[in-house]
Length: 116
Image 1 (cartoon, rainbow, N blue to C red):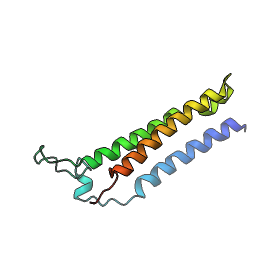
Image 2: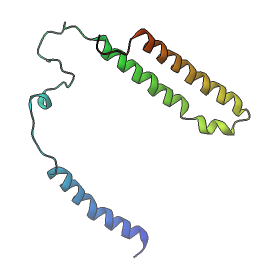
Image 3: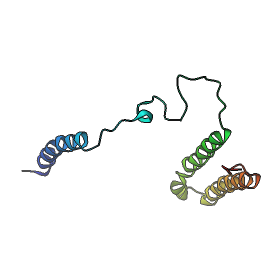
Image 4: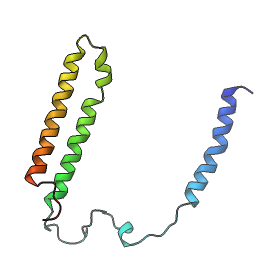
């Protein structure tokens, strides 16, 4: 048999086996938290005017900022083949310095403290 046929047969046999194992292997122990439609800790049937901690919002914003940093720096290895790789390095350094200064500012202001 050639390689293509061997791969098709292998995948045809292994896929149902792995699907069956993944269906029967996990333990099914649902509790109140897992059965709730929201995992954020709020009661979905309660009042919608409950106070929301801004610290959760701050952590979400910080996560988005550093996720954006990764997205902006991802094409950096391809920037090495440009006519001026120094400008690519300067722009990447500018992004990193601005985000680092913002993180240091938040840290000094105490925005990252959970307990007071």
